[in-house]
Image (cartoon, rainbow, N blue to C red):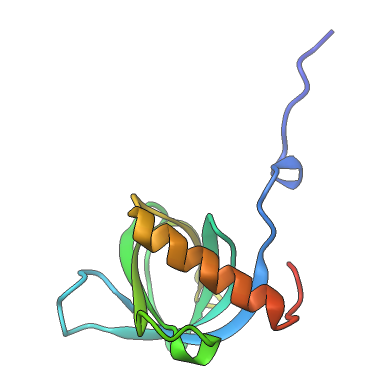
Length: 127
């Protein structure tokens, strides 16, 4: 009997929640130049999907930093969350990327869980 191949449709993913939060994307964490804006389209405890607000080019496996302001999500402290991410796919027609978080600290993981919980409680759609 042949082994069953797993397709992208069969990959088990964590539940993702819709968001429309504005975020900053940058190549280097503390470099003040070259900051690009984007809209966080959805998020889970493992990864995200975002759309750039202007033309942007990147490729799979690029490493970036995303910064998400937390106040609009009802999270008082910290004020923002900066996360190292790795691009898993890039849509050059719609300037969208999907990615995963890299090497999060335990504190960052807790805040990501709070963000996902906030998105879930706000009743935004699951993806």
